Length: 374
Ligand code: AOF
Ligand code: ZN
Image (cartoon, rainbow, N blue to C red; front, top):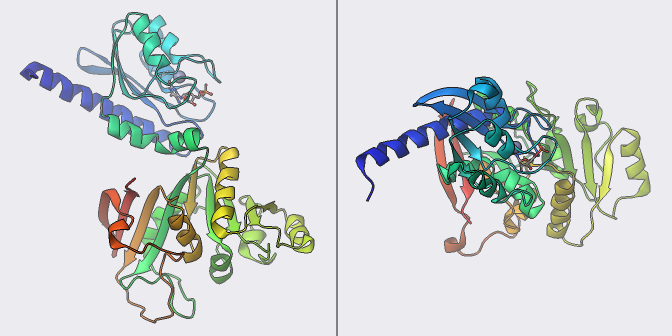
C-alpha cells in the first residue's frame, strides 16, 4: 500500500517531470532527428537547474541542466530527465558519465531510449555507479513526446501527420475545385506552425495542380521542410509556385518510371530533385517514398492532401497523427471531394478511431487532434 508520504512524493516527482517535459518541447523542430529531451535538477524540493536539448548536434539536456546549476554545485541533487540518459559516445559524450561525475543523488526517468546504442544500458550504468534510479515517471507522456523519434529509429520511416480542412458536410473543395479558404485564419496559422517544424510536406499531383500551393511556412519556423509532390509522370509545371519558389525550400518530385526523360530534365533544370519510386501500385510507391524519406533521416512528414494520397495512406494504415479543421460552412454537391479516398474501410467496427483526442475551437472552426489507435 502507498503511504501518504510516498503518495505526495510521487506527485512531486510527477510535477518535476511535467516541467522537464514542457522544457523538452522547446526543442521541437530544432533537434530532429534527435529526440526532444528535458532535464530538471532539484535540491530539497526546489528546482536549481534546467536544461533541454536545443539543437541537433548540440549538448544534451542533462549537460545543459548541469551547466545551469554549475557542475561543481550539483552534488546530491535529484535529476528528472524525460528520456533515459545516453551512455554512448555520439556527437557528445555520455550523459550517464556527466551525471555520475557531478555526483547526483538520484535520477528519475520518463522512458527508456529506443536507440539500440542505449536501450536500458544508460539506466544500468547509473545503477552500477550506485545512483538511485526511478524509471517510468509520467512514462506515457514521455513516450508520446519522442514517438516520432522512436518511429524513425524502429521503423526507419517518418512519423506521418495527416492534416485536412473540411466543411460541416465533409467537403475539402467544391465540385468545381474551389477550396480557398475552407478554414479560418487561426486554423491556417496553426498549419503554418506545423509546416515550420516538420522535415517534409507531401501533397498529391492533383492538389498541386488545383491549389498551386507554395507549401512554405509563413512566418518561418525553426526548420525548412522539403516539399514533396507525388507525381508519377513528373508533370508538375515548371511555372507552378512550387517550382518557382525553389530558392525558398527544396522540392522533391516523387515520380515513377512513367515519367519521361524530358519531363524530368525540365524539372531538374529548375532545381527540383526528381525521384523514381518502384512499385506498380500507388500503395507500394508510397511505401517506397516513406522508406526513402526515412533513409534521409526525416523525422516528421506532414501530409496536406489530397484525398487520393490520404486515402492510400489510410489504406496502408500509415497515419500516425491527425489534425482536422472543421469549418462552419456547407458546400454540398455529390461531386465535391471528401478528405479521404482510397479503397476505404468496409466495416464500421474496423474504422480508424483516434485516441488522446483533443477538440478545441479555433476562431470559428473546430480543431480535432488525435492519434489513430493501434
Ligand atoms: C540524452 N539526452 O538530451 C538527448 C539524448 O549524436 P548525439 O551525441 O547528439 O546523440 C544522439 C542520441 O542520444 C539520440 O539518438 C538519443 O539516443 C540520445 N539523445 N540522450 O541523454 C539528450 N537528446
Ligand atoms: Zn546524452
